[in-house]
Length: 157
Image 1: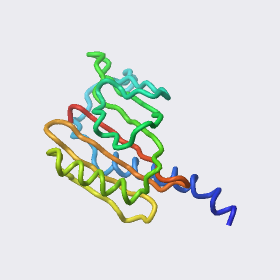
Image 2: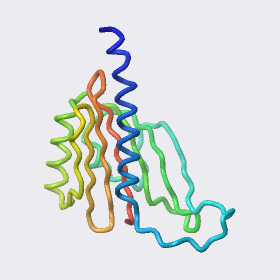
Image 3: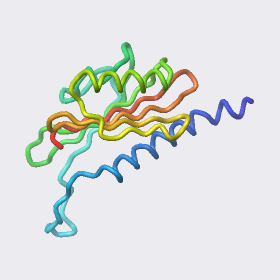
Image 4: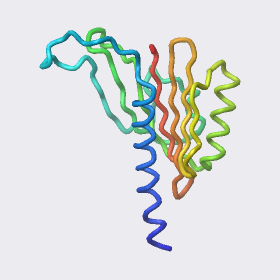
């Protein structure tokens, strides 16, 4: 029994990673064929921090928990220097099922269109929603003390 409780956080983390990979593979942006040189520098800058504050471009209402610490990754366009995307991760004491229902309710009440939902795995859930030119991807996985939530927000999709 003790081995199972040690294994659950690893499985939960693996499920989150797989969910994010699925979201990026199945829901890619519309890319135009690249005409740039193969050795050209990337066009985005990524910053990572662990903090108690959300990035300025991340809507705080996408965090349905209070008093949580965040792990944050921000994506910015190198040319303009402005941030256009962020990924925020936190642990919640709420159950995965309750959070999934709360996010579905939030999206439907705040003019978001849910474009994809995945409940196929018993310990992980995924919601993808759009509103105007913004896109939100919420991945929820079961954790020993509740759930691990990964919320991605892209301002201009």
